Structures are given as structure tokens and as C-alpha cells.
Amino acid sequence: YSEKNNISYTKENNIALISKLNPVIQGTRTKEDEFEFNKDAGMYVCKAGHLAFKLRRQGKKNVAKNRRETYYFDIEKCKVCPFKEGCYREGAKSRTYSITIKSTEHKEQEEFQNTEGFKEKAKSRYKIEAKNSELKHRHGDDTASAAGLLGMEVQGATAIFAVNLKRILKLINEKQ
Image 1 (cartoon, rainbow, N blue to C red):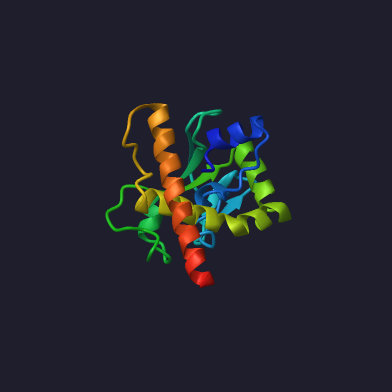
Image 2: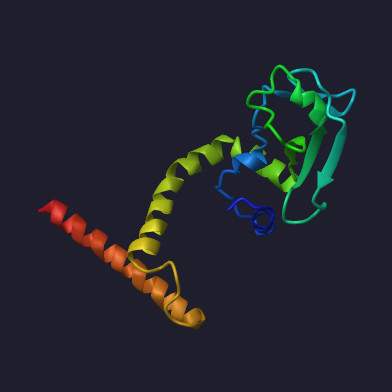
């Protein structure tokens, strides 16, 4: 839900997107304690103190996917490193560490995600998701059974009608 195109669309149409960013996009780094960024060198350093020797940026600016930075470490140093257990895989040809560069859309969504308004609305989102899941899995709303927009509208309306009817019957039975 929180890919760049969806965020851009909701921003253009003045819609509040109540969808948490994927942890990969949020920048939740794996092995955060094992790699530190050295500002002077502009490279990451492993916990043994070995500096990455090469940086490669992957992806293009202003496209749907975020760019990635991959840092390359000297494999010969990794082979004799005292911390190689769990870091270096025997026989590996390279050792890299990658991070995702957040787009401005994702940065803005992350700021919105940290507001109280977002947190309040996100608390009730699970109810909507549960109802959507029920429509998809129990009432055939996962795939279209008829061609065309009208057919899909009829199928969606029928599924919603069935779910509402079930809810009404359940409430009537609870009252008795």
C-alpha cells in the first residue's frame, strides 16, 4: 500500500494514506550493531574496523522503486576476521552491506506516520482489513467472476450485501 505511486496519488488527491511503511523502506537496518557509517570516509565500517572499499548506487532517481547503496568489503580481510562467524560465509566471493535510500514521498509518509492522528486512525484499520479479508476469502470477492466494470460492481455489491445480511441476522439472534 505504501509504494511511491500510491503515496503520490493520495497526496495529489488530498487523501490521508493510513498505511504503515514497509520496514525495509523505513530504513530499519539489519545488523545495525555490526556496521557503522564513517562520515569522514563516506563508507560503512564493520565491527572489526574494516572500511568498505567500494560503493555502488543501484536504481534510478524518480522511479517507483527506492534506490539502494551497496558497500563492498575486502573478502580477504573477512576470511581472517575474528568476527567472521555469522558475518562471512565460507567460500563467498564478496561481502556487501546494502541500505535503502528513502524518497521524499517515503520521508513525508514516515513523518505523517509518526503523528497522533495517524496512530489513532491506524488503530481501527485492522477492522477494515478483517472485513476486506472476509469479502475476499469467504464471499468470492478476490477474483472477478464477470467481465467488465459493471460485472465487478454487481459482484462487489452482492458480496457486501451478503456480509451485511449475515451481520443483521447475527445481531437479531443476539437480541433474542
